[in-house]
Length: 196
Image (cartoon, rainbow, N blue to C red; front, side, top):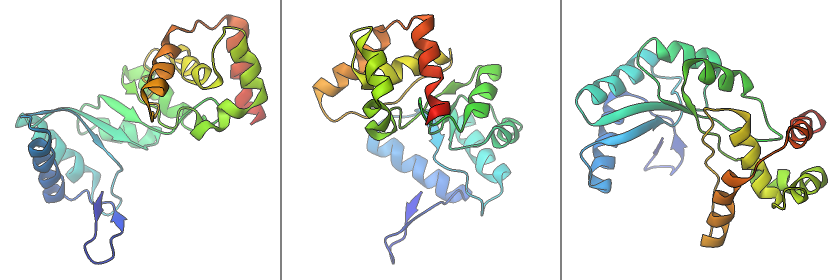
């Protein structure tokens, strides 16, 4: 995504030269020789997918990128992309109450591709729900811990990326990995999406 100098607006830009320029800028800013994972933030509908992914594949072959990921894709787009290059990860919006991308998660599971959900607690809204708070009380957890705990329990390819604003919040997030959900609690959490 690039910001136009004139209007200051963000726009997709998946043109090959733009992708190359952004990778070179990232390498310099990060002071590394290779990006371990490059997520294509969005597929640019104005640039053929073959050109976008072909450029990323070339950057990988040149040693500038180790792995390629996609963000906000459908299962069909993921399948098409895999025809051009190996995909290591998919980063889509997904959480306890928003499971729109369940087909993408299933495709990632089938291909052993990491699924990196963002907005893991729906900006706090899932944690505010009375049902989530009641379930969280049973394993002595916070509602915002139960949401990523459910994600981790939901799929073996799940790698949640919760936001954090402080050390205390970071510690709360990481403690979610230690929460063990019983089958009964998992079933209750599974049922929340249908009631959302």
